[in-house]
Image (cartoon, rainbow, N blue to C red; front, top):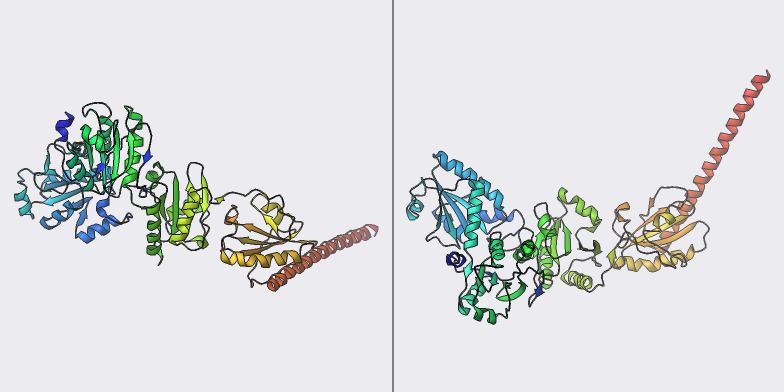
Length: 550
């Protein structure tokens, strides 16, 4: 039965051959990157955001009404080149049945998902498109036909199906039947080389066992060409020894998985296939978030940037270039900082306006965050950041670093998250603190100046000079400024005085002395006020005593 169904398969398919139920993944040759969250099919090309579909339709001169593409004799040919499966309703606008089916077709689009460019839905008005009515011999109204692999000859009729969920079920079954049955080495080679991505299942028996899981998998990926074979000479050609699913990209094996009869792994296999359908760079948004976190790659690198920024296009190209180097190792994500829905992401990574554009890495397995140790987003800097992370050399962004044993033994005290509040809000000493990033050139150039300032006040009775690495300690949200910046924390007060002067030793000393003086005057005024209150209270008591004596 399966072989009979496979005989309906169409040529021109990409090959995905990697079916494993043991979760035993072996990455061969070219490493691959997963980046887009929803399968924004490669037919649309390039790096895709949600509005790219609309832009692409505009380029093709195609209108969309109620989720369906409005097709004419001219635009039908264009759409056939854009997708593997095109489902079309031929209708009469005056027919009630036609209008009802149009509504159901629109609902089917919502079920399948507009972002899945492997399947498109359209409609043809036969009252105005007489040539198409004649070409496809439309007799009954409405009529639904499925075009496969861009072929307009002999489309498949969808008869008696008028409800959205039934239409989707019928379509998925047709996608399953489209698996290419490979019977020779030459045919297999042509199948693999004809597409950028292809999946092939190698099975000992096409009628039983693990092949059923493979066929179930195919239904969810209409944009991916699938093939299968039981021929031993083809097995030998690709070094296969047991039931296996193999993924080919650009004609090269990039992944394979051995198969076992265990339905529990169907979801894991789906993750793997989805990974290879993704673009190099994905936009993080409400539509893609579930797909992103569902992938088997647990390391994410994020570019925080405004899509309205003048440097957006250039930095995305940098990101894409680096992504090519780290396929199957990191998921590359874009976070549009202008979107309100992304506010929680910015807060989680402690991204402020000064940090945009910026790059971070998140390891989901251990929930560890890392900040790129460079101010400029260049190919060299991002690539080095990725390499250091994968080699375990990147510096983790922590709630607090550990307190150094010698943190208070030098002229400039070293603060971390764990001792920050204890020192600067102690109400015992004034503190002048530098907030810095260790990789910043400007910060590094100021550290010797701070050291000189520390020496001047090393033995001062009421002043502490300190510094804190804001990239490694989660206190950044308290002070939303661009590093380096300086703050003065007066003793016996919760106020914070920002420093806005020049970054020179003399200017720092002048500022600190001014704040010390201000603090002393404030304390004297407070003391005089308390003394005056006591005298006034005494005078009142004396007056009362005089009145009593009288």
